[in-house]
Image 1 (cartoon, rainbow over the protein chains, first blue to last red):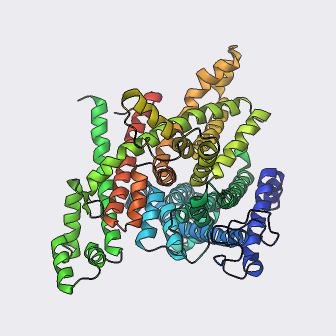
Image 2: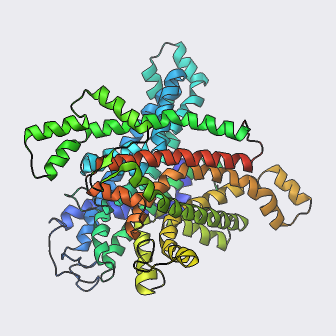
Image 3: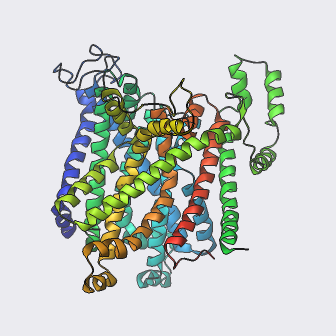
Length: 277
Length: 325
């Protein structure tokens, strides 16, 4: 662990990613304290330019809503949806991949056919269909993103399990009569965890982009303020007040960038041999 | 029968269960959706008598047991009958086919742009590894990789259409002007520049990063050392010996990204008012036209399957070790 932290800390880009991420997390945590009122409330005059009023540093949109409040609350929405959707995808993907890789044979065959099916359907269009059929809400968005993003995890877990299950320590577990579930969860999974964690951290970034895209199309939860929603609304006034569109976009860019940097840092630190690839 | 034809037939046969699986899946989604076509139509009419709704349900076959409905649905899909879009007053298949060329044009342009520039930038970065040029390219790729596709589209409209006035911001052709031949093609090309660039940026970043990694990996192989020992120039080593082998993972990646590109085109087409499949999906969402939406989902999946078969053929052409037989 110490060795891992030392390797991770040597990667300046990854540390930069951690710093940006901590700022975004702080924004998400402070949002209810700093901006207790709904970010949908009209609190200023419309089209207040950024920097014009110290009370609203990022200005206001066409409805006089404070953009700073929107960005803070949006950080909450992005992070929560990104993380929970990834956890859903990891739970689905690891379970399916573990069963397929551990048991092999016809079970593997059937599960991999299903995985292939899900990989063929264009993920974002699939997410649009799911959210629009089940009505946009934080729950439906999280489940939709989870449903469309598990196949790569399943494939990864399966290949790890395939190579681990023939190893001696697993054979030893089988010989002493240990149950399958215990072998899978206690012995094989911990050894397969490193690449799964790396994939997971990169998936949070993709999930945040997907959520922003859905919200931009008007498929966000109508009760929460998301960065994508602000861009979707700001688009109408792109020619006169571009900052309404620009600012939340930069927030998404920085958050996704930070997550990618952290994910790559984790990857390099966990597989030092693959450095520089 | 020529081997390529036999291979194609075999691959398409393999695709049948996948398409059938997606069709079953589509049917399940339609069943899960709150309210069926009859309810939607009745609601549109501003309320209807229970007798009228029952009549509508009977007409659409919605009163029959689910397995029978599924059987009928699959039979219809097999005959390429994806139902009727009441909003557009057109069969779903015709509607989708009329929008398909625009999407294929957009995606084709984006793929060519992303692939060629990605290869070029990746090779350049790898040849200057850990030097300033590599850093500039790598940082640019990292940024482009994290940029939301729809947002960069809007920013490009702001810069190139609103500020500079160089390029049109929306649509596929100039409205009200009747152009033919070359002038028409030029007009469409001008409209294509911004959406194709916006769609390609993310993928260009992906290919740049992958190409750089792939080049560096091939550079470390023994045969490259041999090539250098023979006294070949660095340029010749890079382009004649390394590039071709480094391209293989890129072609694989291209196949994996087709679905993701179709998804991106929904956003890009919405931003630029490009009259393709993606915009059709967007319209279907807002018109609550589930038949149409699921039709788009099904046919875009079929498109992914077809494009992947084409890519596999290209792969075999690039690498003689891989045989299509």
